[in-house]
Amino acid sequence: MLTLVIGGAASGKSEFAENLVLTLPGQRVYIATMEPYDGECLTRIEKHRRQRVGKGFLTLERYRDLGGLEVPAGANVLLECMSNLLANELYSHQGGGSAAVLKGVERLYTRCANLTIVTNEVFSGGKDYEGDTLHYLRELGAVNRALAAQADRVVEVVCGCPNVLKGRLP
Image 1 (spheres, helix red, strand yellow):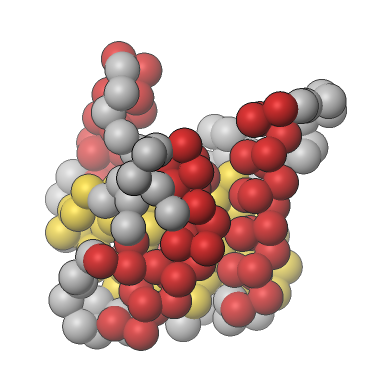
Image 2: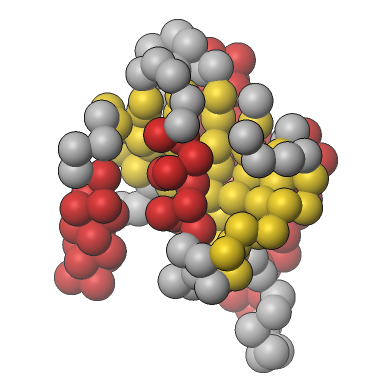
């Protein structure tokens, strides 16, 4: 099953996604996509590590080239988060853009039993953007739409409350 969990910053989407994966029997794999560029990134990474303590996740760090990542066959995979992965693929000289992201998700999904993807909701910030920021937001919006079309379940998390947009919760 492919599940897309979407929400704004600090909406509770990550915690919701982790708890959803915890309901699944079998091995759990957490794919961390945030590169530790600076202190702020390290702080966020550490927060997410603390959230996973004792939950039985095998953590794999992967910043680009999701298609080249090997995960245990039949595992329950949590990809955290699409927003970071896309930024890495768009702005790294080694990146392959949104096409590489979608191909990587497709390959990953063929290897696992369940794939849960966390992503950011975009375009509700009430601001006008331009340049690279607008390009990134448009690309993320397109990736989110493509993933939602393929997903069996889409859940938007607002203030920690899940709103099922497609499919149903277990």
